[in-house]
Length: 191
Image (spheres, one colour):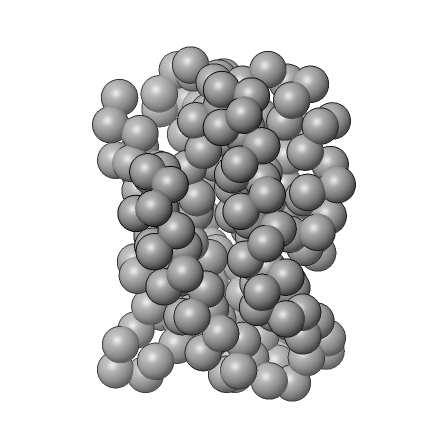
């Protein structure tokens, strides 16, 4: 098995050493090849454009795709995000790569505002992440791919935001958060 992880800063491991990123933890625990193709700030459109270079050229058996939060931060329309994710999933199937879709973690608005100035409406982003999560579940039922629900594990249903103790800045996970993400992928892969 060879897994490419295509995503944004949560996949890349923003402010983490390589050894503490969930793709690296996954590789060490499963003893499989895991290639981290996360790019900080990337959108689903960026992921579509680099699919050939970052996925096909690596010749993986599996693809873990996670994106959409940056699109939402920059006010991309939901249908555009859906179309981009669907395009990547269809391409993976076409090239006999098993897609798995990670569902983005929610944010902690009060923490995120202290670190990031690219939006002041992290509450809106969280609401839209819930809609994106629902779409991914519906599309996975139709297309028969696995999902990894990072959102649910990081969500505080009482506060309706991310669990603060799992974030370094309200957007990106701590070392413990990365360990949780790796464990969720391990469970989804069922190896």
